[in-house]
Image (cartoon, rainbow, N blue to C red; front, side):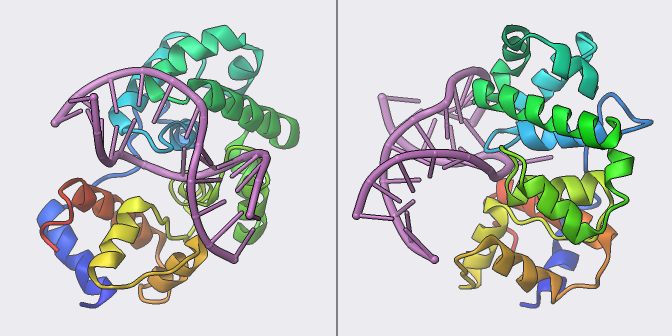
Length: 201
DNA sequence: GTCCAGGGCCGTT
DNA sequence: AACGGCCATGGA
């Protein structure tokens, strides 16, 4: 089945997913999205929501506050997201980078070309390809396709298998309209479908 | 009790 | 380049 047809099929079944879900900073969501993208690494979103709520409660959903926050306080909020020591460190590194280079503003960062922006994110400790691309697509509106474990399982169903992340990415991007909106919706639909074990594909 | 969640880093081969 | 171990909580 064609990749774009799978998208249409999933859309008909699951409808618009409205990603990325924003709970708090709706007027300036890019930072919250980036934090969520780091927190949800190999972790159920439900557990991340508790952390976001705690961060918001403690007025920690901004770069400067996280930079200043003592580690043991950050640990408390992050515990429910798992890997809380690593992820606390990741948030600190991300916030320091953002504050030092872009005045704490994601919008300044997103002025860069996508390739330069992607490389810069990947050079940060704690941000790999999926997290970088989630930030670029969902926080920055860049036209880049996010690959995750559900995407690879979907590919397996059609006996499509690669070694590298970027190969999966090219596979999808080359078979779809070059549209951030479609990339956005498709990845979210793949996650929705993956949670059902891709049973309707 | 086991397995998995909207991964990524690091050391060894 | 490839592979395994590690990180850690919470729900099914």
